[in-house]
Image (cartoon, rainbow over all chains, first blue to last red; front, top):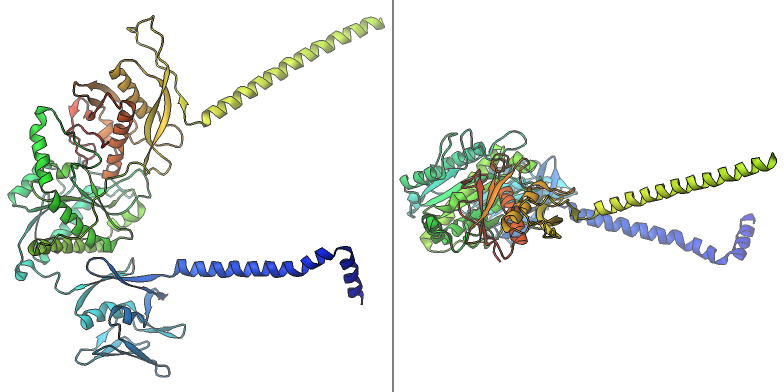
Length: 408
Length: 201
């Protein structure tokens, strides 16, 4: 009764406000709810990690949302359809926790929590590094399932980049010795930039020097390439100072046919990072003049000589770009600049900047031996891609070199 | 006796008024000047006192008017070059004018901008030949003090080239960088500076 009276009085004094007090909480609630839903949706999209499957040319074949459990990566069973065989069907026996995948010609049996995978017909059981699990009442396959089984099921080679959750599926036997493949043999000169006490290059905040990183990568590349039958010589094997002329002389003595100079980059900004590939383009942003003094004619001839190899240099740059893109978050740029390491090199030549020592992330990667090995493997594959393109007379695909930007 | 006291009081009051008036006026002027200086300092255009004219200059000739010059410096992101205007009374003679502009690029770095040229670098001299090639002779700090890396080296060279070509679009066609009077192959081991360079049109 009292309440009613109060309500009446209130209604009489301010009927409009009374209407508002009824609807405002509803409106606020609805607004809050919609904002919450929007935030959750946005958050789920922003945070949903994916695994990317790419082909040998770096093109994306499939993108699959993944889930993490105990630092392991798991994919839904449907990913098998996208990656292995689109006609795959699956059955899950809930009480027994058995998962059966049927592709066109194979039957794959797994048990939740157990690493053994049986493949019928005719394949040895495979022991996965991580067993399948149940997440949100759904059976999930570990990423190792794809890494280990794809080569058996589809006769391909799989390279996994765990940092970026990226799997490259490429035809098997791409990394076989060149001689046994009957292809053209090629001698490659790898030039670790800088060297000696007076030419240290740039330095990282940890004290690590460009000359040392360049030499470490060059030695790893030489070792990896030789494992696959590619003849690689270094312009310096130790921490010694060499002029550019002396480096070129090593290339000549060894009858080099490709020249790859390895360096590290540095920027005034600590945020700039990533691999860069440089080719010597006389039409780049910094140009040599069309007319020069007569005294410089000899040098001009040398520059023109390198310009004659520009097409092959670009082809090598494209091959490196395609293979190294697998290791990087953003696509690698090919830039044209008149660089000293490329100026009078009488063969196709490229400068590869392995990363920025002025960037913390790059510095950490460049100091990591696993990263060094994966870059060396990627560069070896790039050499093979280049050689195979020469043999088949197919120019490697790639993005045209860019002129560097000095303004933003 | 009463009248005298009154007269004395009114004169003291007038004097007090005058003193107060002068004080308030002075405070107002000081405030105005301070505000004006603060406002001026916020602008990108930075007035730089003109250097003394050389003794050889014609005394009858009027001093040159201040001119705007663009110095190419790194912005706050330090990833790209931006033109920053300064005002300077430039010499009438081309070589001396070039010397003034390149010296300004080395020495003038306004707040919020960063120079791509290592601190301590000096300009030993400049020379322009008949083919409109400008030779800029820097001290060895340019090479010894450089942070290295192709990106940083590219930005240093481009800052010099852009500043020169922007200030002298008709007088200079190409630039050759020298260190202590000698030709150099490179600043930090990457860019080829053995020949004069120019920027594409």
